Length: 161
Image (cartoon, rainbow, N blue to C red):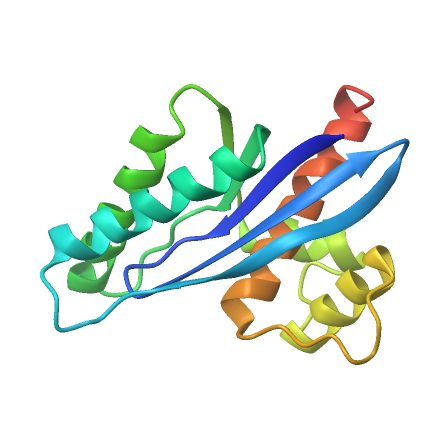
């Protein structure tokens, strides 16, 4: 089985997902959110993310990692966000880390680059045959799953996973 990690990176609530690829079938192996106490200094929050990343790759030997590309809205928020991006860049330096724009993720997962969060989640559920009772804890978690699926589908087009 090939493991692919999807990350929806933020300073306070990083979504993550591990998708397994086996014989052209996709399986949601594990997923969650790395929550941070926003009262802690940035360094401690970033170390918490790094520690969780280590736990994930120790449990699931990962071949690929994908994250949503950063964006700019407000300079202060963007500067804080890119600290978290720096941690992922450094931590996954030896793994094939790629980025996808949100429109690309929506297009690959749903066929519509302007899909709503609900449409993306519906497409994820169908792709992975998730039971109706399965609930994502946050949009960050479901976004991370969509990012991993995007990378897997891109790899099939480019490399034939």
